[in-house]
Image 1 (cartoon, rainbow, N blue to C red):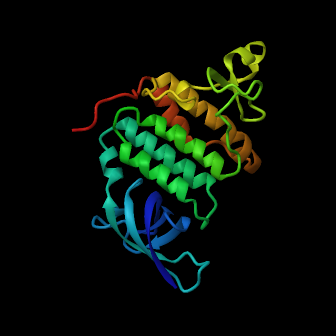
Image 2 (image 1 turned 30 degrees about the vertical axis):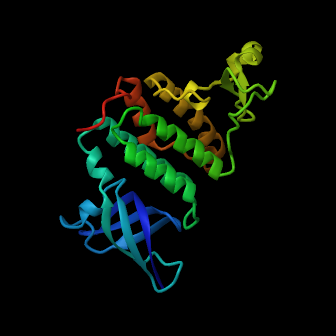
Length: 248
């Protein structure tokens, strides 16, 4: 059997001297791996760079086999990130997180669309906030959605400033006051503020989504959050920068 689909490269691991085992996030079939003959060659390796959007053809005798990939580049997002340390780190963080949390061969078109939007925005003003939104979407797709639309205590929809670590629901500033030491900060851009967020708000957003990813996804598997994600947060904290003009 075989199929053709659009895919975003999540991982490309060397196998032997010249082959790769490539994992794609495909539009219609979700996270799906395949063997690429000669994928490590100078001609093919650029196709399978992390983050690239490819048109992939998968072939296998049986549906549950690893199968083989052939592909052509549709958008070289990965190559665009190579000269920017922050973009490259954010790209690696997104790929590693998606690869670690999504089940194999289960379609998640909303995650595909969110990841494609992040890749399209790499290097543009405020792009790291899209990684936070992507992780919010991942939690929703996995059945652990955050409720950030209204206050859990009062029902208010304005001045939302915290999130309950137990319920994942937003809490307004007034209702949170007696308990705020036990609550998680909610950065304004996740509460409706449309301005490009400063770096500290992006870090707060990643801390928020990381808490729930760790609690619901990684702890049950006895695994840590992906190291590339932690390295990206560390780079942001050390002044990697968030708001920059579009690339020339």
